[in-house]
Image 1 (tube, rainbow, N blue to C red):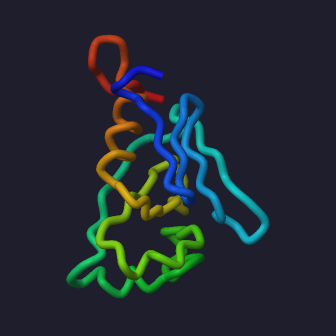
Image 2 (cartoon, one colour; image 1 turned 30 degrees about the vertical axis):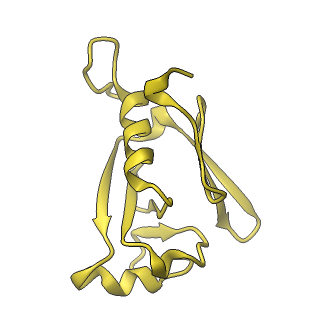
Length: 118
């Protein structure tokens, strides 16, 4: 792994050369998402009008965002929404959301600095 795409693991979210592993995504295990499956990401502030979302410990309240089990979410202020081209979007709260966003972007970049279509 290059320095630009260094790994990340906070116990709940892991980024490696293969993709993102969301631990406790479902009651029965983890979900691994290859970087090629990620169409885009959105940063979601868990403050102001979205503050109520920080109390969503697991599951979905709107049938669009799927939150993995994270009992520390109420203490966090930033989430990442992963667009996989489907209605339901995994929404994660890594300890360092900016680092995870940089890793996703680095893996999606093409050889000439353009974002790959996949």
